[in-house]
Amino acid sequence: MVDLLAPVSMGLSRTPLVRLEALSPPGVDIFAKLEWVLPTGSIKDRIAVAMLEKARLEGLLSPETRLLEPSSGNTGIALARLAMMWNIPFTVVMAEGASQERVEILKTFGTEIVYSPGDEGSNGAVRVAGEMAASGDYLMLNQYENLANVEAHYRGTGREIVEDLDHVDAFVAGLGTGGTLMGAGTAIRESFPQAQVVAAEPPMGELITGLRSIDAGYIPPIFDPDRIDRRILVRLAPTIEHTRTLLSVEGLFAGPSCGAALAVALRIAREMRSGTIVTIFPDAGWKYLSTGIYTGSIQEAVKGATNQILW
Ligand code: PMP
Image 1 (cartoon, rainbow, N blue to C red):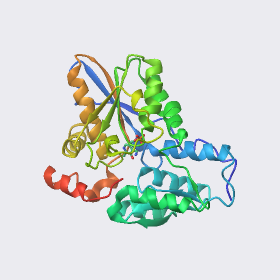
Image 2: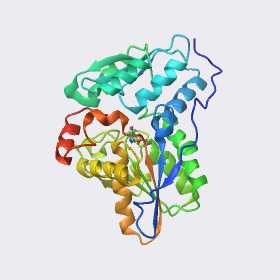
Image 3: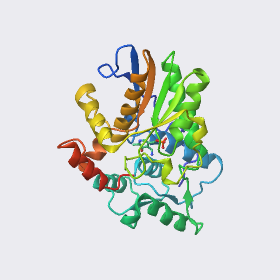
Image 4: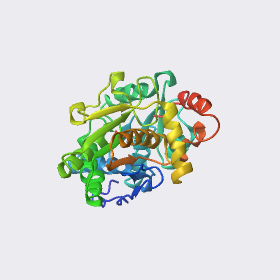
């Protein structure tokens, strides 16, 4: 049964904003928001709660509801936790070849897994989920189109940042659905109108977990490129190098999209003589151990990460 009186916080709490003491260059403060303290270890707990709560308020949840989402990544895992708590059957469509950690986490949370052809990558999962949803039997929340994604970052992530800092010159976040950039970026600009909003984005054809290139053809409906100031491309090799630097220099065991965000934040830091940069670290390293990005040569690590479906 769906508990219609479920408390909306669902285990969410304010996340820490830390200054990167060793990596901030002289005169510049780089702050990172550590989202991995959230219940399933990623920023996506915020949007999963917001999307499901919106669906509940719109009367879309009934005892017959079956949830469906094409994500083996953080959103799938965050939704799986809530579906388990609310006793809603949940099916994730994922491309064959997703890492074993993800499969095990989803199974632990009682999620049904449907596999799409591995050679079609994450787009294949979206296609198969779309076909399944067309039957009308499922509720698909779709983080790429759901404005609750943006709202969660406007009311949560962004507001927490403006409460914690008295000045922001640049806000850097990885571009996935665009929810973080749109929501938190707007909240930050409202308080600090001079702040630049900067997207960290992989070049087309390079796979960095959780991030996408808008040049690859799909622009998420919730993402408006005109509302950001800059897009800075970051490749997989420097992403892995910066992810390792976070561990060795700051002691932060971060996921690869944090390395991408750090690389972009440092580039902006080099362009300014003084100022405050704030960035987002969406998840920690645990889920990526099997990809081999933390050890051995960077070249081997790039090859290993390229062969995996990480989205
Ligand atoms: N990093 C990771 C690890 C993610 O899972 C995501 C979400 N896809 C992002 C960054 C990008 O966040 P957003 O979807 O808000 O653009």
